[in-house]
Image (cartoon, rainbow, N blue to C red):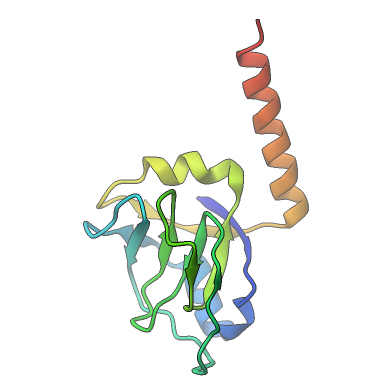
Length: 133
């Protein structure tokens, strides 16, 4: 289970597409690489068709191109883009994304910014303690 927070364009997806995103399993495809992990599953439909102005893209953003199949943008992602993003992977789950391989199944669960920040602090504390001299 990968935890995510809402994105700036989460409201571009209606209740059905949002439910589908959080309930269905997706499969990492062989077209994945360090730029993005392409997912297969039931396509998601945005409820808006107007063009999105190109904007900066954070690491872990999950964009939904016109084919409706999400892409988790990762370490070598482009810096800007114009597709709506349905969610963002929380920073403490980046290592989980980095371990995904073609054929792996992935599911998403919505969390809050507060919980995401707390999980990141906990992860940093564990790492700091593990590598303390």
